[in-house]
Length: 211
Length: 94
Length: 296
Image (cartoon, rainbow over all chains, first blue to last red; front, side, top):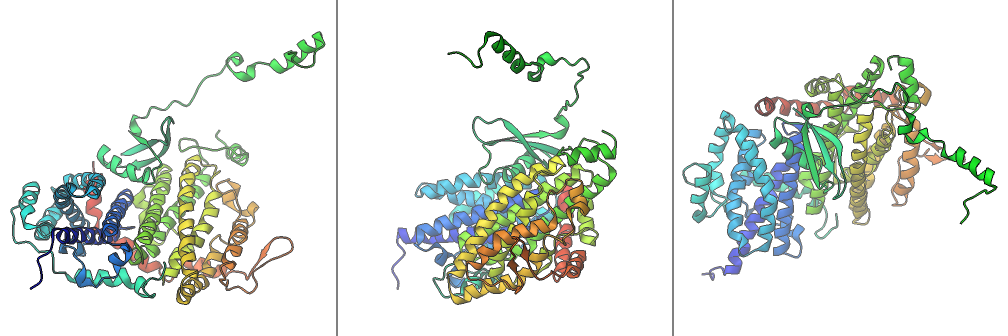
């Protein structure tokens, strides 16, 4: 039987999950480039996607000397992202519902990490603007059937972003009861598709090629 | 609603009109103008003003040609030349 | 100022006008059409590039490309606002774009096939565009001239990014070099057509009204002068055996196919329908969002 993970290993595992979440949600959010509901939002949304990828990069750099290799050179099963971020959601109601749920969950997660990790505080400061943006849209769309349906549909996935101990806090903020979560650890079909496209250029040259 | 965007490029600079965004309220106008006019750190501050709130003034009467109020209403050069030629000097004596 | 003749003399003397000034009907109509085409081009220009954001081979390239494409969307917003203040609502411009009534630049009707295209577009297409955009900095219509300053500043980042992408590949593996060469070979004809057919300045309505300050051929010559040496110094081959600078300093080249250009910009490019359909699909799908948000 393998030795239980050390505290350091547990932290690294958690950070890899955070980085993979940010990378993949950044990937999904950048799918809206050029096709968001209005041009002004398109520009703002793109900044959010860039910030997320920037956060992923900062965390990968903590975990490895080669952030790109860590970001792109693993097999799909080796990613630690939560299923929520993998879902293909090319309609605005679902996209904003995911944004909003993810930001609420992420705030809980990041607050817990701030004590052990200075980088978490940095990320948190930038996320303030993401939260404002998500709240703004939530306030505008919460009365619409499209948005309400999307939140309910994504709720089990949102719970899966956080470890069980943090789910009551999420439930209190979102106003929905804790239910069975779609847990981190397995992947949806969404990830294999993303992975294929995400790595196709990189895989076309030998490892270590410069781009 | 159209919001006029004024931006201060750096501390000490005046706000300069830079463009406009269409947004339903100040919250959306801010979220959108932040990125459109600040994502590269090119502004230290923005003013967002509803276009309707701007009061334009763009005409003046100048019927009586009150030149004394303008720099071009003075012929310093010509008079100075005349004064110097009377005294016999061609440039300022130290 | 209420006569077309006075207005013409004023703008030809370097004068500028604002949204609230009286504009001759012909000037206003030509200006709106020109501005609209520019806005449409920025918007449609996003579509060839967005797929490559998702495929970028490093985190830095992903960020840089996202920022570049974000700029293009931002430029579209700036330019559509100018046209809106001239009286044409955004919805009407989108409708005309999707119906094929309004045009956009030739280069955005073509497919992007490899990461080599990403470099070539950011470096050379944006370089061609920046020449046209600089010629608008003194546009007689001041609101348009003013936004061009921000646009030109942002485009300069794109050219840096594009050149860096190209340089990484031409100094990489032989296969990577080949990606760039192949992309350049494919993009060269649309690049040569980009600045439009060589109407003399005195027959170009855009120059007549001082909307543009540079004739099409001058823009093309400026592009060739600036970029042919830079392309050749990397060991890349330009697919035009006739391309050379003559003793008078004028670039000679194989005459581009102007019929093809016309055919493409009137909506018959290889990717035109597909890209317009994508726009139309999302515009329709998210109509409820605009209603929920903008109805304030």
